[in-house]
Length: 238
Length: 312
Image 1 (cartoon, helix red, strand yellow):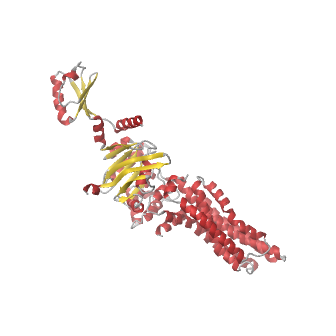
Image 2: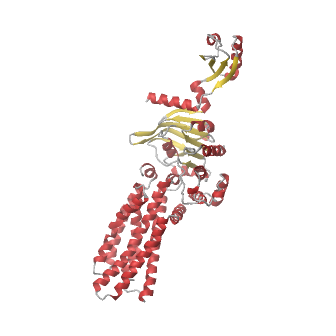
């Protein structure tokens, strides 16, 4: 556990000195919160029920893009950075186990993604009260809460798994970022479907999305862990 | 039993293949406690693969090895706790400060007081004044020093150094060589991979020459003597025709003459040289200089490589 913590803090220290990651982690949530607020602000005055639902669902979707996209940059750099600096071998020469290394790298990406998503949601609720005077009932209901606190972490986990897999084969951080973003798109399809629906996101839809994400994450993480062995890293990684 | 106590690295038929290519074939080696052992081979000969196997990073295809009594494959984690590895490139975190680089590894190795140990090594390697600078801003020589400090931070029993002076300018290389000299202790074994033969000659107690397989092992001086014998060179004021045939001393193994220079192979020059000189004076030779012919490790290495290539 101690070694996992050491890896996580090292990753964060490096990420804080990386402008690409830092700016992404600050601006992406702000843009998403801004866009969600616009949707809710416009939606509250619309009398047509279907249109209002679509706008609220779209606002929710922004909070699902965040946990999927934020960890990509951190995870991609954490692997590509090691490759570029040739620092992986000295790291592997320490007594750290393969699973500790994998968990350290994964948590270093997942924790900020979830933290920023939840913090952004808090900011969104706060500004919503300031702007509208209340939180619309369709926004803070059980499906929304299930999405924010249940689906977001799963999306981050899936996203990190995909990124670690992609990064093991990539030699360039930008390429890893782009391919990983492409790789996580399938996980966002159900969310895109929500926004086209005229019915509000409900617990059944959230449940289906959750089960699909758990299955996809297990598959992706299984392969990512397999790729993350010393032998593979030193002899197969590019 | 005594042998086992002395030996910290032992390999038996250690082999590693990558597909159809054998990176290391049938390596039998024994490295003793406290010695600086040179592992010499050309680029691509399997030096890095061997270090990776011996430090518990990759598995051998066949054969076995023990490091400080621990078996590779079975006790890899325990081995990694007891060995330090300097990889071919320093592999520092350029966005982290000098102190953060070292502290990170001290914590990974679960060093008892990481902050104190880090400070001690930074002071020892004269990097304390640069502790807050980013590692990416250090010179090549400084980076290498920091990488060596990193390999030593947990006080390993065995230190693997993979090409420690490769890519360094002569001044930085000298600095690193001096540093390696200071690392010699009775308790620490240094396994030095290099293709810098002069460096190996200066630093190593014993060397192994290999290219995919082991070609020779021994004290550099003994190896040279074993392959070339000991030879005395005598410069004469003028060439004496037939002198080489006239010497006729029982201990002389071979005499070669080139103009006014004699090269004489002996088994015990310390004892035999005075007798030889007396005999030459008796024969009327006017001796200008007497010296021992020193064969460099490079000559030995190149001859062995050539022989190996011819065998293959």
